[in-house]
Structures are given as C-alpha cells and as structure tokens.
Amino acid sequence: MADIEISRVDRVQILRLTRSAKRNALTAAMYAALSEALLAGDSANDVAVHVILGSDGVFSAGNDLRDFLNAADGAEGPGNEVLRFIRLLPLVGKPLIAGVDGLAIGIGTTLLLHCDLVYASERAQFSTPFLNLGLVPEAASSLLMPQRRGYARAFDMLVLGSVFSAEDAKAAGLVNAVVPSSDLEPTVLDAARRLAEKPPEALAAARRLMRSDVTAILKCMDDEAEAFKQRLASPEARSAFAAFLTKSQD
Image (cartoon, rainbow, N blue to C red; front, side, top):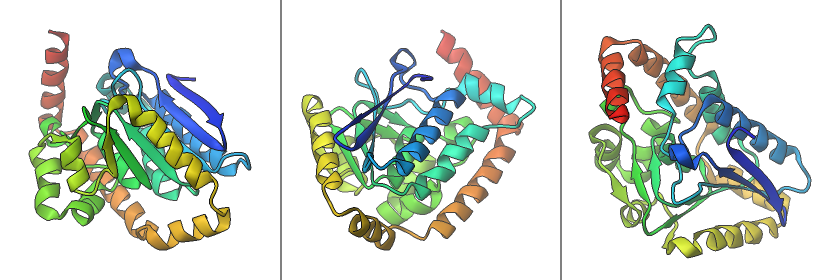
C-alpha cells in the first residue's frame, strides 16, 4: 500500500516505510496511507499500540520534494495529505512508538515529538533543514522542540539546521534509548507488547494527563502551515528548491 507495509502482531500495529530506494521520502500517497492506518488502528479492538519503522537502514528522508512541489502546483493546493497527517499526530488515541535507524530528516524528526516512546539505533541521525529550503518548521515543532530541548538547542536544530546523533538526541530527551541496529526492532516491539498488556482505560487516561494541550498544538500547526504556505510561494524558497533538485540530479 503506497510504500507503506502494514501488519498487526500481538495487538501491535506496525507501519513500515518501504520506499527505501528513495530513502523513505514521503509522498502524498504515503501520508494518506499512514493517516488511514492510524485511524483504522485507533478504531480496532485488536490494536493497542502503533509502531512506525523505516527500512533498509533509513527511517525517513522527509518529504519527497518533487511530489510535494507537484501537489503545491496542483488545483487542490499544497500538501493536503501532509497537513492531514500532521494534524492527526496529536490526536492519535493509542500509544505511538517509533524506531529510528539511520536518517531522520524533516518530518522524520518532527513526528517523533508526538510519539510516546522513541528508540534509535546507534547510527541514527536527526536533522530539520527547513531553513535551507527557505521554509519554516512544521508539525508543531516550533512549540514542542523548545519545550523539550530548551530554546537554544531547539534553535540549533530547527533554524541553524545542525545534525544530531542518536546520543545527542537521547541527551536532549528526544530518544528514550540508543541500541545497536540489530536490536532496534526487537526493543521497539518489546516495549509495544508491554504497553499492549496494560489496562487500556488506565493507559488512555495516563496519556491524556501527560501529553501537552492539544488545542495549543493544533493552533501552532495551523500557524506553521500558514507561514509554510507563504514561504513556499516565495522566490527565496523556489530558488532554494530548484538548487536542491538540480544538485540531487548531479
């Protein structure tokens, strides 16, 4: 399904990004498949936990820029499926766990701010190079990253665009544990199964109490989306996108 492999094991729904030839860069179809799977899993009695994984040593290189620009130039407007997925993240009703192996760029990093648990391999790398493309942060990262990491380190990642290692991410509270690549999926699935064994009503109540105010998060997402839309139409961003796409063809 649209480069997303969906499976269910022991009341755990596993969403695996399988577009490894393109470093799991997300297309509109992949965003749509992820959204539908999360909604279906939230409604299913045989699903207690969601898990997101990459494949072949890569978590996600972020948006597929060609696909995104084609959507932006289309009649339906830019990134409708992207925005739908992003706005769904804080509303997911069941625990969400991510296992990050290799690159986690853009949304590959910012979606982790909405996960309950994040595990990373020792070779994971995190970056959010929005400013390099003349754009702004998304997925409420402009709100959640400073809360999680403090303003200075959030600015370093979101604006300066510094790349962070798995150990850096763990020290900043973005990652729960760093494990060898061979242990990543077993570690993630063990945590998912342990959560699936918890009393479901108590688990849901604990998540509601611990998570940030959804209203504030959705408001931030809407503000980011408006700024993103304005930036995307700017000559500055168009020039940066053209340079990036030309470089990627070399």
